Image (cartoon, rainbow, N blue to C red; front, side, top):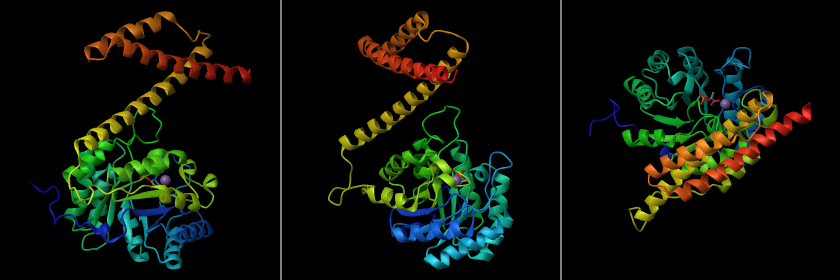
Length: 367
Ligand code: PEP
Ligand code: MN
């Protein structure tokens, strides 16, 4: 098979560490105290292997907190000194790379908004020529596997040997339950194309809200990812960036404690039985069905809002009849029984009506 990366096979450099490797720390280094306190509490859990903090923050809109910059780097290095843990941060320009190398940052990562741009990735790769430092590449914001692989190749060609990938989900026009759609297949495809590459999952940026982090983290481990990057802050609700998705160091400890680490195959049989493979496929599909249903309800919510504003009734019989008729025909063509589709539609429709009713009543309270 033709090698994807032109340099030597990617070293599984993370495998020297515990598996799963846990990277944690605040979304952004905000102040010296916040950085050091968070780092100390994370180290005290005994579950964290690498500390993270954003120093230069790529924000979607200007005017938001754009990172502490150079000064923040000194706090991160101090956190490293005080905890004895290696540290990592995001680099987006050759200048960031230079400052990190000077300061003694142990691992660099390339953010999702940088991976999309081959010019930026090439500039970073050029700045890393002849430097032996591990680099983690987040997936690009858009679901483009070639772009993700391209970024890894640019670094590999520049001589970077310790490479890894971070799966942080993808922007999607569909408003599902997650901030960034996980699209697990993209990570699986990357692993299939570059089997030696370690992939770390970032449940914080996939979830967007702290409640979903354990679910995503477990799913990542079940897909045999090498580790997790999870954002943690001493006062999550007061965070200057990504407040909703950060957890306290104590919660981080609990999340890790409750994860079930499974091995890809049991020691006495080196193959998965058929039932396991089929069940994994079912799990995967159920996951997608739940996401689609949640997206559908979100749209129902918007419809409820629109109907209220325009004085339209929630139930419109003709529309419902059209839905039943077209979906049953579609279902039948795909081998689903009329009875099953009918029952399923009824359940979905009832929930949708309830969602819309809630929206209407909420608005009435305000009038
Ligand atoms: C981050 O890790 O804080 C970050 C900005 O992530 P991403 O590049 O995945 O959006
Ligand atoms: Mn963040």
